Length: 128
Image 1: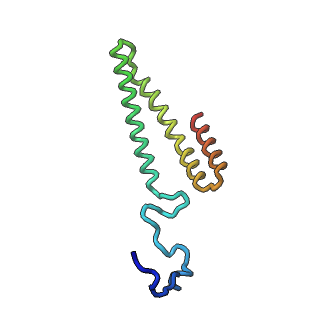
Image 2 (image 1 turned 180 degrees about the vertical axis):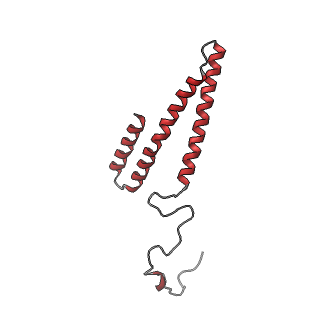
């Protein structure tokens, strides 16, 4: 532990050249673009990855359902099962921007009641 009792007096302020800096003269932290939404082009990559995984899951679900139906001796209409799975996934992927917009609005809003309202409206809209 250092002995602060006999330490020489020093200024505890920043130097003069740090006081009146122009806005934006420092580099942004890694991973941010400075845009209003936060992260820049990575959102589309994430969305494309989620869409690809969701489509793969839909195809596997449809083929598994058709195989189970064939084992039971029922009609294993693969085309109809693919249609139902992929149409559901397509609608969900089309509604994802509603959730992304709601999250952005919630980050900008400071009032807790407004955040709860935005979340409730987004969840109701997505669920409907």
